[in-house]
View 1: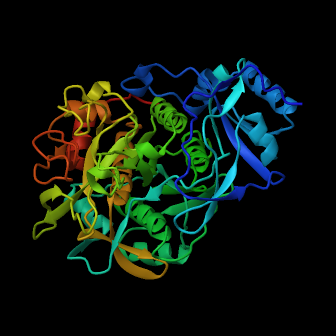
View 2: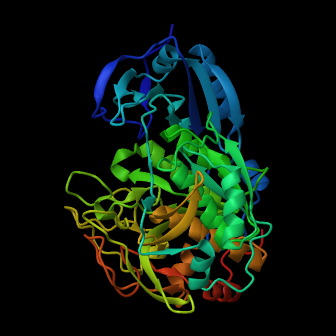
View 3: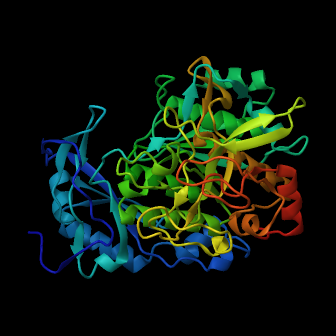
Length: 516
């Protein structure tokens, strides 16, 4: 008998009713699995911005799951007929397995089946999750009961682009150092669908004049490398791999495949951040959705993962979205994309790029093809407060009622307009692809090159970028459309696009994170 007295909600776990057709109850006897994340003391800000980064092992020892908290969850599981699966101390995560009925009862909710807009079915819930009052303060989030699709890839194919660039040509335009390499660096890519074909990689990289990188697939929560069609998520996966590998020769790429749910997304990120096998120094994310589509517990859990990454000298680059200042929401309000809006994410906006006869940078404007096409995401967070490094950046009040001044998005930018897009190969076809999905792996490649050249991880770049002039191209023309570009930081292109030789010189003169 499960005790239902003395229970309290898990903070931030409230789910709104799905705006889709309800098909009926779930099969309560079917097997389910949730990921429960435990509270933990976060490292001092000095480790994330200016202090020597922690090793993954040191982070796990100092900030991993508390033994008493793990024991409390084990007791809760036994009392509720659940089985404890993998326990990850560094991630502070515990897998719990059981029937859907047992899981729903254990967390005080009901489950139903819904039909999504693509015709697929998913499992949903309404309201908060609950736990016994003694256990609830030990838990920061529970994910997996509701498996509605959480995010979209931020890429835009273009069959007949006006201009297309190979990744090495983009690197030349952004002044990567001659002979730049990312040897010894690993970049993690987070993918919530699709896959890559090794034959495409073997054909693509020699064609653009870059050695083929080592690419390994890592499965999370049952996700696998599953290539399908070029107009599906394969386009995202291949864009990410080919941009990183094309601008950062010699890099190793670890692709973390997970289901497109909040559980899969968060578990993939925490797996990559704490991976002691591949040890990525950069995590690149090209998936997201408007802040309004996330639960508070999911946003807080993701930001905790990014904060942990910063403490270990791991940079996280995230696409800011491809639907302009509305982020695709239909409520006539401005929205920013999450996880780009997380304070410890390097949010990456989009531009249209022009180069001169020699391939050198000539000009950039805000990417905005609205209303028929896409546009760079950007604006002011409704959730996260203004970070310390943005206080002097001139982040404007939100255009929404209340004029909130919060975390400004994006931080930086790069070419994203499909009409000045990237030449990529997807499922045997060569095409042109744009979107801020290309900018996150571009900046991941920038950081991998910087890490190799400096002999240390740069980690959290934000304080350096916001305090240092002359290391980015300031983009001053265009809108997205609720916000306008201008001198200095703006809510379309942030601080601008990279000048990699200047970034390297500035970091050599003013190292942000020390050796680690």
